Image (cartoon, helix red, strand yellow):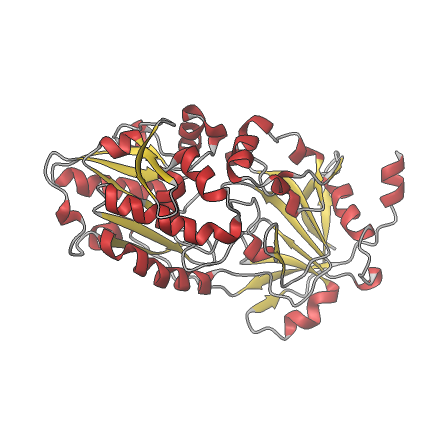
Length: 426
């Protein structure tokens, strides 16, 4: 046993209980019908003429059913004789390269073969206007040269700033369609100015670019598709505020007032822009800490769909070696430079195994009662319908009508390499 293992070997591991979180399960069952119905709204699909070339955006997040939503939009456009194509709209993600961004889309099943349309991936932009503050606004060249561009994206609370507009169609325009240039311009004045910058940049795009309408997607607390709304361009700014309020009400948080440790089995750019959604874990690079005020956070793995992008790793106190071995500086640092946010990629303590990562969290807690340590163990911040809690949280969980738990006790199991292998009943 090496010195680190020896120092952590006395960690007291509590019993765990499988817990169900009663979250909003309202979900669209027929995606195609929902898209078709949404596009019946006045001043949306009817604005597109026969033969028009139409650029559709696809972002870097793993939006549930995104390939099916895109296919449904493409189908409706083709029915009226339009010629749709797809552009990656994700700022500097994918290592700020055209190939990297196309690879990200392929990971979500968005390929030319699957979509039946061309995917034009390029980092080339054109200047389309100037904000009132004198900042140049850029747009993807292929999208700008098309007859129309339609932003399609998820509306949700942003993990690092607050405002009337956070993650949504305005951000998709300003940062996604704006590519690396747009992302950098919006970020370089700090997160506190992001809402106003996004509004300013998107307002220029709405004025200067041919955007007939946008499509906003809201997901429920279980990552299911809650709503799909087609919004005429002149209504996007105001209507997105209302849709964001709806989305905020659906976002779950770890449902305890105070915990000592959060174990997150995986993080990733496909899960959240910050790897782990700060709104869920209560820890943010720019916003600080909030409920449940975890003293320690440990993470075991990086999703394959992140393509090595480890943005947000600094939200953890410790990570496992298998996560560290997946990180790619080439695919992450362009994103870091663009966002002017080096704190987000500061690498925490790296433990040689998941078990040591877990033990590190327990042993380094300063304020916890080690005999009654409060631990929440989740798969990731998109998967809160079921998780595990330590024995010390049972009383609080019992007083929450949204939580239910089994009487069976569990302990975390580890394989021959001391990496997590699931919970085992005892």
